[in-house]
Image 1 (tube, helix red, strand yellow):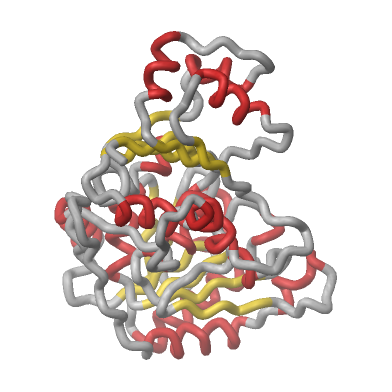
Image 2 (image 1 turned 90 degrees about the horizontal axis):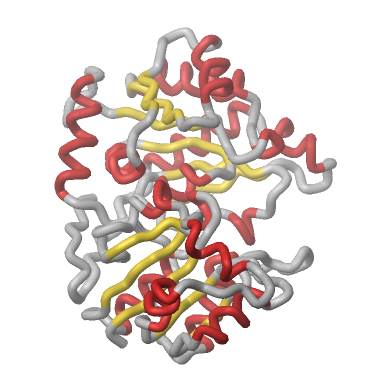
Length: 338
């Protein structure tokens, strides 16, 4: 295979969980040109960082006919799609419309995977996303999502930290109180008290990532803290991953940033309530999941997690040894700088 296209929409966590499938393709064809179509802001963490040689937005206007019955794609789009030896698509396509349109324009080889598990399915989503890859006869090795960062990502992350008074040797903990939905968020005030306790007992600084949807919950957490944290707002995802790779520990909800933390090699404490960590939990050598009582109604499970339990989990995860750094073979073109 010389040219491979992966189509993966969805948020940050969805994409991070797809990385083992993309890695299997990369390892099977190390010299191939790999392109990914999705949300470009999310895809930056993979662009020219081992996984993707190029990225494109799923929201391009010229892709729109591919989602319409009997849609007529432009000659340019047809030439683009038929120029790949393999297309792996994870787009939700219950009625098969997108698949039929791709087949109709004459794509060479199309493999489709369902990105959403059945309601009663208890299988990790990474394994589900690997299923179409394995079904296509492509060997699968590492099933843990990992990001591979450039040296520039590391330097920019270090410069950000240094500019906020955190030197190369200063310990810090990252705490992210946000998530894609309010029902998956542990109360901001409890995050604040955990952050204060970590600073009081360990001397480590606290860094709080803030994305566009996190302003309110981060403001609430910061307002209840005794010692102000470093708020890391607006960082590009590769730079945020570089910060996460340096932290002593990370604490967060079921969120994309939590999955990115685990993929960056950080020691992670992930708080789960209404979602099942057996399906959606982050994978990694240093991941600890704290789950609310499954016997409680969904809306009360997170509230059942106590601050002492989270603090204890942070101390336990800090003491786990660093995992070996896996350097990808082949021509990924990235430096694994964790």
